[in-house]
Image (tube, rainbow, N blue to C red):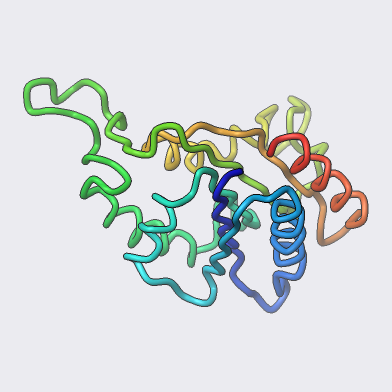
Length: 194
């Protein structure tokens, strides 16, 4: 079975205490351990040790990033985690620089990853309704998908040569939540992809 690192990227705000993200992390851990996967959980809001996180990334066969989307991106604490951990990992532990050489400085940008054969899955919570995506008539996203919105997250993992698994999302979690349905869909998603 696989080693799975779950990163809970939620940052607590007065209007969002992180209960849904925390519950999804717990559910994922239970489901994965029941399938004999070995699981480690990192809660970004509790802080981190850069060297340990580099070890965690090298240990993991699969990384599951559980995060809310705040202002069209990840919470600032996870951005800080990426700035510290992923920058330190450019020493060869996650990637060998950016993949370019002095002989070909215009080629192969982002191809220096050292986590070949490893996978990642992104699980998201949104205030936005599902209908806001993939619909050219919707004002904000103008027909864009969830994966279009989180393209930078995908590129961060691709920078390390990791392969994407299917993205999961809970929608409209603050104004029109369907939590029990979200849990069932998440369970099905985990069972179908791990």
